[in-house]
Image 1 (spheres, rainbow, N blue to C red):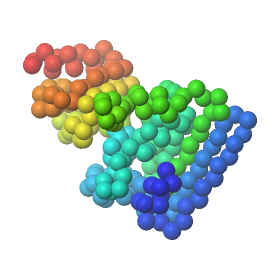
Image 2 (cartoon, helix red, strand yellow):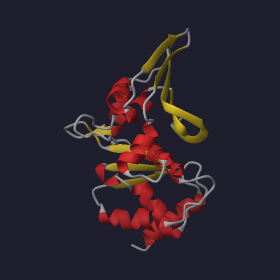
Image 3 (cartoon, rainbow, N blue to C red):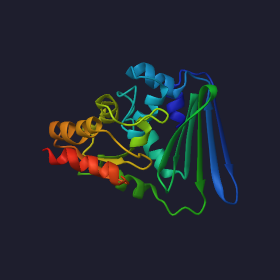
Image 4 (spheres, rainbow, N blue to C red):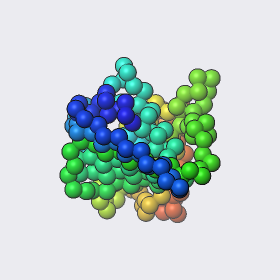
Length: 228
């Protein structure tokens, strides 16, 4: 996280704080740079800063591929109990071990703040985290979990192919993509068809696995799969 601030923020100052209590260790890193979400949006020509969060949550995202793999934020968020990034008007949270991701709108903040908490009693190991998402002879980052609800803006329904294409960006870089439908009440036929038929047919080397879907979502996925 500190290297990200040094290499990517274009800032001049980074503040680092480490606090250890009887219960946990808390780490804060705050820089005065451009802001992580704004930079990703600008460099990758994304819709807005919220779209940057969706891409970060997938993993394998970097604006400097010659020097970074884009894996640091993804794996760090899985190693700590609480992981927060606040930048611009966006607040991103990942919680372990429940694996919950949230995007919240907040008052504008210049630069980037990263906040990490780890319980002193955690039984989680770095090997277990890497083993969950890496495989093959090269121990490559081959699997990711994508919270589908991050595609939504506000209370909008996930119905269109354009929304699906936003979700599907860079999926082909993984062998397995687990789509977590927790918090998604329904999806439209166009959305489901683009993900589970069109993309799946065009990218047979990428396995799509859905989890935590309710009856309505499961029925729509089954409907498009049945069409071949």
